[in-house]
Length: 470
Image 1 (tube, one colour):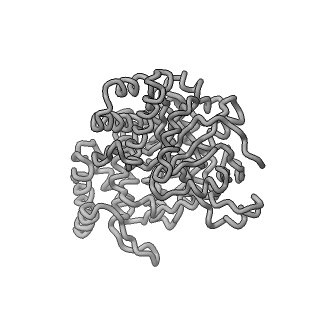
Image 2 (tube, one colour):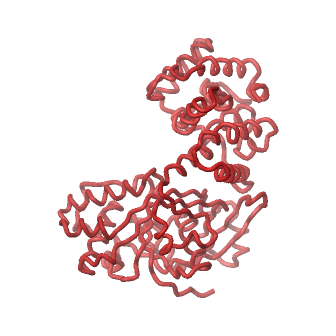
C-alpha cells in the first residue's frame, strides 16, 4: 500500500507508543472521515529516539486495538498512514527550523512526559537545539515570527498531551519564561500572546505499546515485520479546553471520534480521576486480600464485583456535577475497560502508594457524598479499611505482603498494628496529617465506621467482610 499525499499541518513532539496509538490514529481517522487532509511531521524530543526507524518505514506502522466495545470483543490491526517524516533536531537542526517556514503548518502536539513541560534556565537560545521541550518550541516559534515578519495569521494552535492537569497553562507559562529569559523582545511576546493559542487537554487511552507477547501472531496477520507495531485499548477520549471554532480547523469531533471541545477540562479531569482511578484504588486491596490478582478478576468475581459496582455507581457517581447520562456512559465504558480480556492489570501494581492515591482519588468523593447524602459512603470507607489492612503486612497464602509507600507511612502503620488495638489504628491513620494535610477526625462518623470495618475484616477475613457490607 502506497503513502497518501496529505498536507503537512501538524508538528508532533514525540514518536512514542502513546502519540502513535492515540493522536496519530485520531488524525488518520479524521483524514478518512472529513476534509482535514493533514499529515504529521514528528520531531524527536530527546537525543536518542526512534525517528530513524520511523523514516526507514516511510512513517507507516500498524496499530492493534483490543478491548470490549459495547459488550463485544474487538481485536483489529490497521496500518496507520499519517506521518510524512521524522526529524531529529539534534542532528538536523536547520531542517527542524524550516518547519516554521511552511505556511500551512498550523498545529503543535506534544507528549514529552510529565517532566517534559519544565523551564530550564540552563537552556540557551543559541543551543542547537535547546534541551527542554518548551525551549525547542520557543526556538521554532521565534523562527516563524521572524520568517513571516510577525504576520498575525501565522500563529500555531498548540495541544499539549502530557498527563498534567492544566497542561496548557503550564506550557504557556514556560514559554513566557523563555521569552523573558532569552530577551526575545516585546514584539515577539505580543505575537505569541495574540497569534498563538495553547490549549489544555485531557487524554485517556491505555497504550501498552509494542506487543512482545503476541508479535509473531500479529506479524503473520500483517504479512510483514513492523518494528513500530503498536497496541492500545479500544477506548479513547480527548478533551480539549478550547472554543468550538477550533474544531472547525481540527475537526476530529466530526469524525465519529470521542473528541470533545469544552469550556473547561476540569470536570472531565475530575470524572476520570473519580470514576477510573477512584475505584481502582479501593478495589485493589479488597480484591487482593480476597485472593484475586487482576482488575478483570475483581470485576467478574461474584462478591468483589458487586463491591466495585457499589463504589462506582452508588457512591462515586453521586459526587460528580456533569449530566447523569454522561457520567453513566463514562462509568459503563470504565467497567468495559476494567473487564478488558486483553489487558492484564495486576492489582499489586495499583497498590503502590495507596494512601496518597486514596487522598486524591477517593477522599474528595467521600466528603462530597457525606455532604450531599448526610451519611458516609460505606464502600469508600471499607476501601480505606482494606488499605489499612493491606499495610499490616503478613502473608496471603504463600505470598509475602510488602506494602510499597513512603517509609514514613509504612512505619506508622506498622507501629499502629503492633498495638493490636483497632481503635488506635483507626485513630492513628485519621490523625496522620502528613498523609492527608488535615486531621480526618473532622469528618463526622469516619473514625467509628473505619474501626467497625477494620474489626469486621479482622474477624471474618476480607471476602466475608465484603459480603457483610453488601
